Length: 196
Length: 152
Length: 224
Image 1: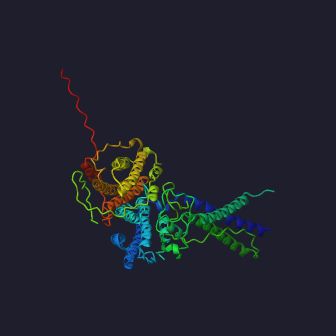
Image 2: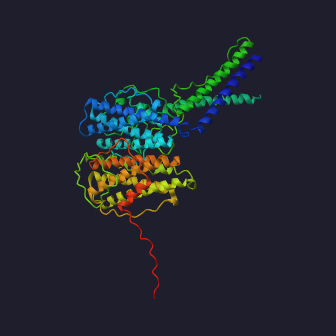
Image 3: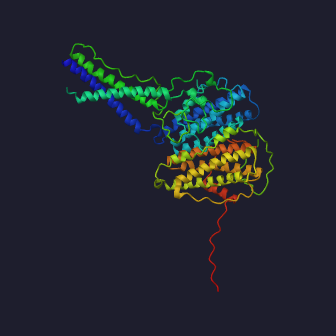
């Protein structure tokens, strides 16, 4: 008799604990807003490293495309100029992050850099995604970091408009940019397969 | 027959945990597109209907990108808004097991080892990679996105 | 492609000799039609904070943005009304004009009674002549990008920072678009520079596009 009551109590106590933890956790998650918390140098580093990753992918993409040598005319001029910009962005962010800069990622672009059509398609995605990524991060940056990021993001938007015009797609699809979360941008970037 | 309030509370908690676990799993399965799907569909046209998670890529060129030709995408990347639910279920389950184990150990040292009571196992949390550096919560505000594939 | 067109070179009276190469004039009208979607929803959604609570410095920034949007809205609106442009330029003016109208609407909605009034403008033919349109549009769009960039770090409320950044990059898209149509590189440098409010409004004033209301005349003295 005593054993059975004690076992039931164990069960109940554990369940109540579990339930309380779940309820408390849900309440905390509903109130807390980790990614939207106050700007700080530590958060700057995290967000700028996210931007640096995007820049690494872009710089690597244009370098690979030029190496393959299938681009001509305006598309080639685009790849050369824009590639130089992305390299400058990588250098800038690495300098800003110093010892906190993430290391260069392993990249593999498969066939996406082998023809003008695939290149144009992929470049369009990367540039729009870069704009979305910077705009997702920017409101959470400290003011100095925001000022720096702002100088880059408008150039990414120019790149995006340029390649869209080359592709025959509207350079500016909407009056204001779609708002994506940083997580959504990262997930989309991973979907490219370039990061392996 | 009087049912103790503690028993009612415990049973309610169990139902809550099971329901939450089941819901999170089914929501996660139904709503979250894979990274590859996101890449292929990107960028979305403004004003695209929200009800089409499998919207084809809007770009005019026919050449598929690398992801579309079947290379391995990151399959373990969890969906945004449901990581929180899954983690909470996991914690709750863990708390349950720890609580049970702790008290049972104490009891066993006193009594002979009895049969464990028939317990309905809580639903296991879906396997997701949790990266501590990632914020738990998708902080995009509703109503200011035109991204059509967002889960929340 | 030539490298740059300097801001402030709004050569409204003179004529610049430039070889304009027509590049890829074919457009996909279906995509462009779908592109004309108002972005007012974005700003409207962030108008949630009570109007009384808007920081007065943010009000000043929003009104400054509204002023620049008024100019662009009027400029592109007149281009469309007069209808002297054709092809890619006409299409750019139509799409971009719709965006600027959406921006004006959004800022006016957020500011409510605090919104500055719409000025009157006289563009003195810059909306009818292809060459002058190209030059003026390039200057306006680059100016808008630099202006938004200059203000972004000064915005107090996150509710206005997010849409301001979302418009900032759209203006950059506009700039790249018209630059390409003008035969100059859409993205000249790796980094775009901010411009202060004072510098920006100075450039705008130098165009003399805004029609100044005559100062209130003194009442003539009764002499007889």
